[in-house]
Length: 110
Image 1 (cartoon, rainbow, N blue to C red):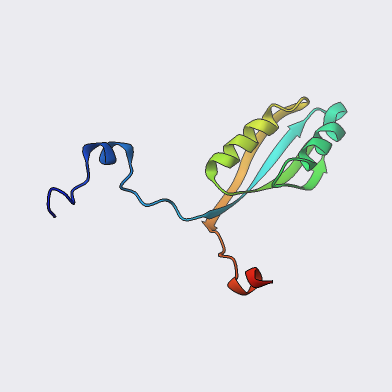
Image 2: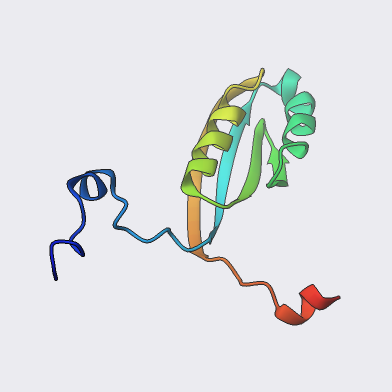
């Protein structure tokens, strides 16, 4: 490798040598513990958050799943849910990720 081909110090320090990450699909589940008197309001708010699906509710606990593009999105949604009025806690229970499915070229031609 010649000096002209060598990475600069700035490229090394800023991580620009790493290829951009391939798109991923993240699926996670949460248990959201809510105050009983606020359960319906929290449920309604959760239903409006992108990527959130409600699966069960009992005794002040709501089980939800999240579908996000990145781990950072999971953290953002978890914090958003934790800060809702009436939420006492929101705990991440499960997290799975894999490469995002590539769009079928035939589907694009429509």
